[in-house]
Image (cartoon, rainbow, N blue to C red; front, side, top):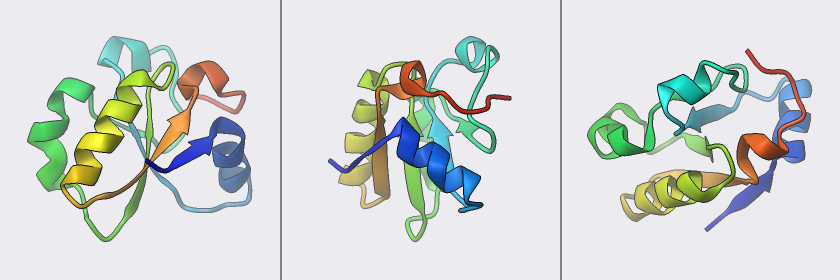
Length: 98
């Protein structure tokens, strides 16, 4: 499974790199703050929403600490998606939130 650090994600965003970030936390968790541009698809809905994703795009998967996002990353990878897990999740995020 490919991984990326929160710091690397932050650096890419600060350089203006367009990232496709999926936050798999529950909506009440996301309401407390998420990475700008991230879309929320709770882990329990990933299997039902995967048809909305583009297999030609790369996605960074985020959760609170890295556990749920690693599950989602493995799941989406098994369906041929290009996915990377953000290590440490939002607990490691030091950048801006919205």
